[in-house]
Image 1 (cartoon, helix red, strand yellow):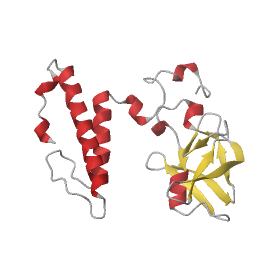
Image 2 (cartoon, one colour; image 1 turned 90 degrees about the vertical axis):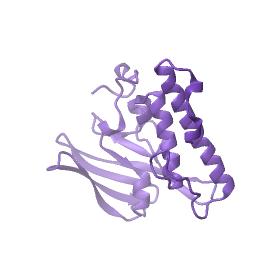
Image 3 (cartoon, rainbow, N blue to C red; image 1 turned 120 degrees about the vertical axis):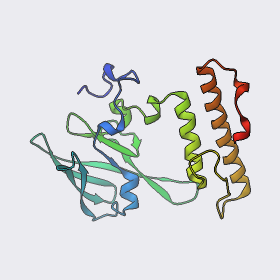
Length: 202
């Protein structure tokens, strides 16, 4: 495996994706209340249905201590935790990458046996590998999921209970814009004019 910034990782088509690596996600740790100082636990990944990989983690006030064996080498080091204020009040935790020191939600285990952030390892985002049509449909799907709508475009489109109408209209309009973009891109790909789209579908 080439190191961080390796030239063979620069093209999106050949760059690795998050699923190629074992990773730890600070958001999942926070949801599980595993960042509280004094917490001791094993973080485990399934490998092939029969084997697993795991690391031992100890939570301290401003960092996690990771302890594991990688290719016969015993590894033990700290990963910093920073808490960043949110606009709603409170704070959300972020890792400090052991390699570059930048903040990150996820760290990935790579060939040298250390965890590092996506930028250090040249990991492509999932949607970097998608076509423009797939990206538009993915964004529309995320909005439908947030609004609790069924997955197909002809389903009813109720406002979620408790959501302000202004927010609902804004998300609905954004959803429809993504769907119109996906339609226009598809029609372009098959040689038809954009006006051939059926806007009444949404």
